[in-house]
Structure formats: C-alpha cells, structure tokens
Image 1 (cartoon, helix red, strand yellow):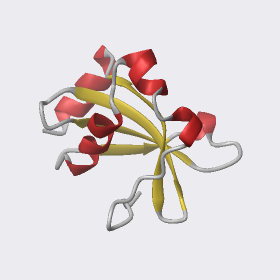
Image 2: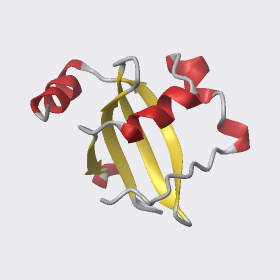
Image 3: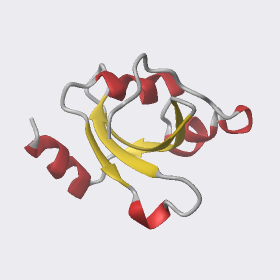
Image 4: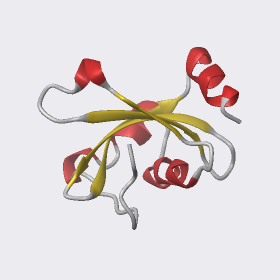
Length: 97
C-alpha cells in the first residue's frame, strides 16, 4: 500500500476526539506515525467489507508505538482508530527496525 503524497488527513467531525478519550491518543500523534521510516502497513482483510481498510504499526516523534486502522478516501487518509501497540504488534514492528 502506498501512502498518498502529499499526506492529507480527513478527520470525521463526529469522531475527532474518540481516540483521545478511548485510548489517550491525540490526532497529532496519530498523524506522526505516517512519517516513521519504519512504518509497517498491512491490509485489514477482516474489516474491509464496505471499503478497503489498512492497519499501520509505527512510532510517533516521541517513540510511542501505535497501531492505526485507516482507509484512504479521495487520496486522503481517514483514521478509524488509534491505540498503543500490543505485545505481538510491537514485536512485528520492532523486527522491521
């Protein structure tokens, strides 16, 4: 999966603070992982019913390891969820470094 360039985010107005309240991940932190040189992106086959979804493992500027679920609409990245990586995800991410 190639990330559209330039990277533009499309935030759902009704969802802008969901990840902050649920997982303590700000929108800014979420966006930072897309600049991570070790970013890993996989297709999210289990949840790609209506549109193609992706899962990304990456690190923020302060090295916080995050898992992001997103889709691409009209060449814009639309974040579905963002949270800290679990142990298995962190191992997969760190193997790429």
